[in-house]
Amino acid sequence: MSLFSNIFKRKEKLPPADMSMLNADMHSHLIPGIDDGAQTMEDSIQLIKELQQMGYRKLITTPHIMSDQYPNNAEIILGGLEKVREELSRQNIDINLEAAAEYYYDYEFKELVEKNDLLTFGDKYILFELSYINPPEQLENLIFKLRTSGYTPVIAHVERYPFWYDNFEHYDKLVDAGVKLQLNISSLNGQYGPPVKAAAQKLIDKNYIDLLGTDCHNMNYIKILKDTLTNPYLHKVMESGKLINSSL
Image (cartoon, rainbow, N blue to C red; front, side, top):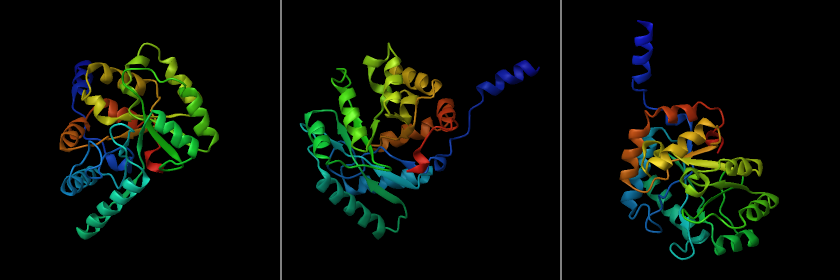
């Protein structure tokens, strides 16, 4: 009887994860009209209200900075942030909204690193993403430059880079070099396909993940996020004791 009881228990749906335990989301696209995220102020406010209802008390939004596609800079991002804050105040929505950036690993990012001209969050964390196709060249050099300049590199949605799937030692090297690894919550629900989901689960099993992000762009992301709240791997990573979201 106890055996069947245990089997039933394992199949029982978990309650939704309490996202207030994280306190902060550190990866989203909520400033309207400057990247592939929210397109209007109405979009922004709707997404922010949804994230607040999930339990988040602080949102660090991170618009793309990508030289060819999204040529944003600090002035554009911080100007957009101020407009969203004004609208939140006008609507009496009480949430802490900050902004940094999601840099793309390209020549412009390397130039900004050299100039020390970077938008950071928390304790000088720098969020950047890589190409999904080609392994990054000279990544170790850039990480060293960031670390010696007082920054902590954070690789965005680290589970989404297929060139690392066959050799998880790459992740060990990143961690040893002082890099923080961020995982997209919705990867656990298969938003980006089975291989990404499998990689996300393996990264959690190996206790590599330091930060969870929603990477919220639109209401489709909200729906998938809500569907992911009962995922056992989300519960597992939130109980790992390693996440630093709440300290941001």
